[in-house]
Image 1 (tube, helix red, strand yellow):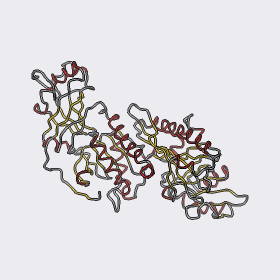
Image 2 (image 1 turned 180 degrees about the vertical axis):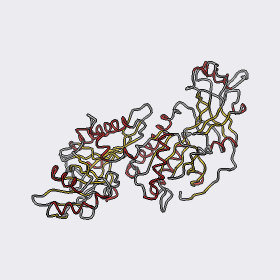
Image 3 (image 1 turned 60 degrees about the horizontal axis):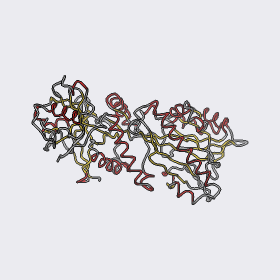
Image 4 (image 1 turned 135 degrees about the vertical axis):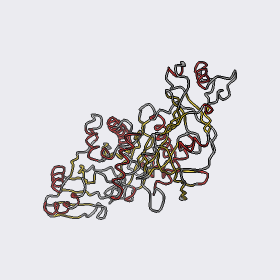
Length: 488
């Protein structure tokens, strides 16, 4: 899985045989007002369509030869789906010029052109020890699923867009060799961003990349300006179906804002608006005189006492000078009989047709003294059924009620965010249950991980990748297309 090869733009290969779907073709094409398709398009590239690329007889059809491929397509539409559509015979030169993968993609007839695709790009950071860090295995598994669905899949890292040549330099995965190959790929039709943090040296390149991709492709992830916690809190707070599930929160731009939030709410969690994995989170509790702080190091027992307002201001003056934060009212979490805190994660994904669904759900159980339930801070992932064995029997109905309302809140949160970004493919929604089983949305994650599902529900993990592919096919207009054949 770690093996990497680099390949130039020119390479020896054979052609492909791709089945053409005409169900979405315009009436003028099917009624004969347009003689035949004149161009072949993939990504942003267009090539003239040579006549021999369209066989005159549909695969498996019986009857006379047709004067052109369009005659065969029209006959199919007249007879219904019993007659198979024609195939495109793409030679090696065409495949190379369009940067097609080694396996067939989908093909649809649109106006006077045949459009190939979709090209699904994952935008991710390169790793230090593994090619894409902890996501390397995830992307390899997704590449296999995409191949089965006749979807071109590649991983694009910052700075590799080639706008002038209308292509990218990206990594394709070859399952037979367990190898990633860096090669010329098409401009993507659909982009799935899997980056959260931006190293200082790549920020400018990543901003340029996102601007280009948002203008030319379906962007299935929230843009970075819309991914910050405070922005998302405001989006959710305007949705009537979500607002009752939100703990009170305040933006933090300075140490004075921290002080004001603690005075108002009494017990808050302060976290960076672009934080991830529970990093840099601090809990602050107002005392009769002074404040009590809990961090990742001090945990949730003992803590650190600050005597007065000035001590609190000094502590947060430096922290708030380099980034924005959010202060959120603390929810006292439901706990197991061993006093371990519990919260929930729901993975909500868009489905073809626009309806969202909860693909997977998991409980996170932290250690008794932890201030977060993130796996990276020592929490354990469990199924909902497994959690119940760690609860007192009087807690079980409260827990089940919280799961039910939490799932409804997660779906409502996705709908609210997707209304602001219609091409959204998925969200991870973290839900807290208090001691009475009431559900609260702690935050939404625009780039949710799959580690928890890999540990407890591999089928949900596989389905979550499959649904991203399905949504990419749907949102780019290839959902009616039959699969191709051949390739080498």
